[in-house]
Amino acid sequence: TERTLAIVKPDGVIQKKVGEIIRRIERKGYDIIDIKMVQADEALLRAHYAELADRPFFPGLMHYMMEHPVVAIVVEGDNVIKGWRTLMGLTNPTEAAPGTIRGDFGRDWPGDEVRNVVHGSDSPESAQHEIKLWFPELNN
Ligand code: ATP
Ligand code: MG
Image (tube, rainbow, N blue to C red; front, side, top):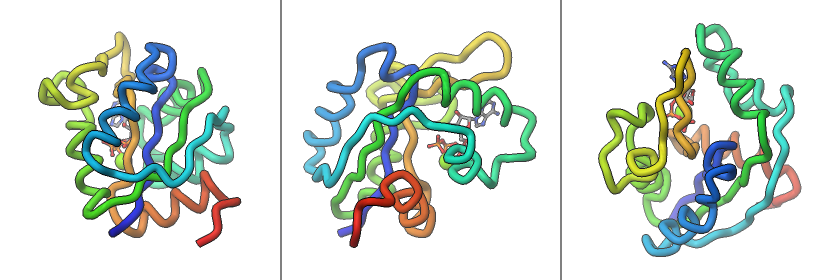
């Protein structure tokens, strides 16, 4: 079993998809270990997205992620890191398959933003790093 960090991004919260997304996590059989609503600040997002800092879309990404509180969730299950990314679908909502969260609820945005509803850690190392960042109070 392993853990991953899932985030319902601002557009998912604004569209009132939090319940639907939790339903999909539970339907897949994963366990919710911890969950909270967070207004992300610049320091948290810079640490979270450190590897994207010099990409052209980074300022837009920071703005998007701070425009409304998000819901951060620690999810546990067998192969959950890969499995949660499968439930999310591809990064670009236009390419994400129908039936995935991004395929069903994501939007390409005028300009340079990709409003894709959810986040998921992409490796065991990033999962551990991101869970510590978003849930410093969770000891394990
Ligand atoms: P996430 O890390 O949010 O789960 P991801 O792993 O599918 O998404 P990353 O490459 O890590 O994709 O990019 C992080 C986020 O940055 C994306 O989810 C998206 O919101 C934004 N992003 C990525 N690529 C682009 C792009 N080319 N243009 C605009 N925004 C982008
Ligand atoms: Mg990523």
